[in-house]
Image (cartoon, rainbow, N blue to C red; front, side, top):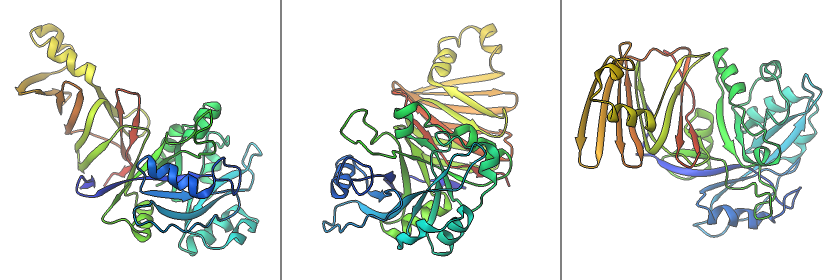
Length: 339
């Protein structure tokens, strides 16, 4: 099944932003202009406890989504949960007292609830499973990473996925300062996979997991057919297949270079792989090898890995893909459930 297709529109989206309507440094229109100038096609204005409404007249402006960030409830560590709510029309929902009632209302109203910055909020596993109805969680929050190095929530995500919970992962800015240091904008985004750019398609993509998240790296294509996985990217330094607990597989361009450089040393090669074949086609090198019955093919150019296929790979309850580029940027696919 094709999970990420190069035939779709790949639209860069900012799903968590703040303006002067709450505690941001830029006016709402300036927030939209900032993201427009950085190549975004979708911007969600999510000020604290209020809907920021803005009229966008220019046809080439980003699509603006209404939303808000709401703090509610108490975690095991007596800290509030933070929810990013998209597609709501009524500010009064912020006055709903109970966190679960709030999420239920959002979902009944056709909106989307995203669990914000779980690491920064100090949420533990029990907190994450004690509430239901959030479509996604922030697996990377650039503002929290810049502020206090608590932007990543991948371990929390994997804990949920390993337990059988199905939740998507988004990367966001949670921008407040934009052009003022420490700069917290254009560092994490969600790439929506759309047939066309409109609000219905955006919401459909978020609900169905039709997107990947990024801090710079690219996933052009992801296909999974049973135990066959194909990942197309752009000059990747490392590609990792991740499943529950310690299950997975990772390969870097330095690993492929080692195989290429040591192909003549049979003893060394046999200590790493069972069989290997190397084919050179112009500026591309194709390295095909087997290890423990798994067959791996990596297509390299001078800048990194462009295509990885893995066959006869046994993964567990779920599978997700992580790509890292040479600048340290990451990209994360959404999880694929085992059949």
